[in-house]
Image (cartoon, rainbow, N blue to C red; front, side, top):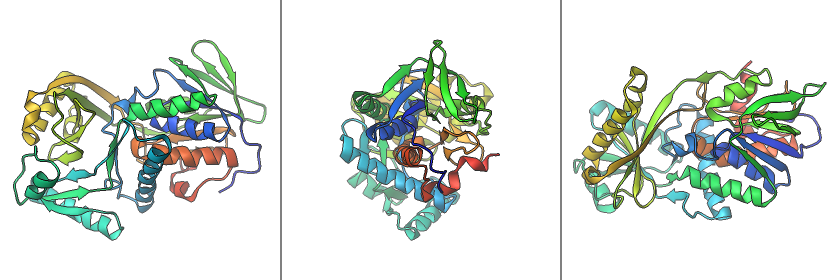
Amino acid sequence: MTYGTVKPPTRVAVIGVGIIGASVGWNLSRRGAQVVFIDAGRPGEGVTNWSFSWVNASNKTVRRSYFDLNVAGMAAHRELAGTIGPDSWWHPGGHLRWADDPAAEEKVLETARLLAGWDYRVEVCTGAEVRRRLEPALTMPDELPVLFYPDEAWVHGRHLVDRLVGQAVASGAEIRSGNAVRGVGTGADGSVRTVELSDGSRLDVDAVVNAAGPSASHVAGLVARHVPMRREPGVVTRIDCAQVPVHRAMHAPHIEIRPDGDTSVVLHSREVDALIDTGEDPAQLARLLHESACHVVPELGNSTIAGTRVVDRPIPADGFPSVGAVPAVPGYYEAVSHSGITLGPVIGRLLASEILSGTSDELLADFRPERFP
């Protein structure tokens, strides 16, 4: 799809500097655009830093086009690691998933069969094989079926954001941290012209990218645009340990576990998320996560809770990304999505190309903003 033959924008404000905003800005900057990063907090320290940060497509089978976009996201991560270096942000090594009751186990195996039919690599192992080859610290029955997805990974989101923003700034990009956007001004033709910040400054721009995550609906409202968002809070806990006993991300029964560097582990659970709106204290939610993790990895019993955060996931109402131009507001673009860790690099590349060329990629055809009236 092509949006006319307008002059490519030269100065672009990227509102929200999580993984998606950083990826869009980095791609724009390396192609010659003048980028201004704007974030009400510090880049990479919002949802991006409090995410399970699992790079995958095995959990994205509800629609084939969404699966394909996530597979492209995985490939974009590998390409990005080759371009900027993997350093402390990129952690390939695969992902494990298993269940503890017959119905859940059959569902897991059914998904594996579907993915194998879509040429997505998956191995069915036994618990004994997993402990011998991959994760000796786990407790699980020897004959338990365990799925291993070798092409999946986890990402340290804040480190990746720091790297992308740092390279963009070195190439001339500006950064306005600690600044909320108070207004977006338009010209007589309705196109974006200015961005007003909470410090009282006003920036002249040719385009804005709404990558504001949980605040995306508010930013859209500044141009009289409605982005319906789903409310789905999540709680993530980090625990400190002298030595991390696991080597990759995993979905065990009732708990998700992954490394987070040399002395830290991240925990999450959808079951614990369901307790957020009951008014349960976040400290108690953290203890529940820690207790569940210890049942799977007993060595974590010697670890301590280092931090916990409840965040709102940035999910459009239908559950799918909203990415691209909004023709009714020339110069305004959206980059709003859950699974931002998986999709950040590919959305960044595709949207930057769209902004500069006026042409959208077919990978985004099902995820255009126009589907929201």
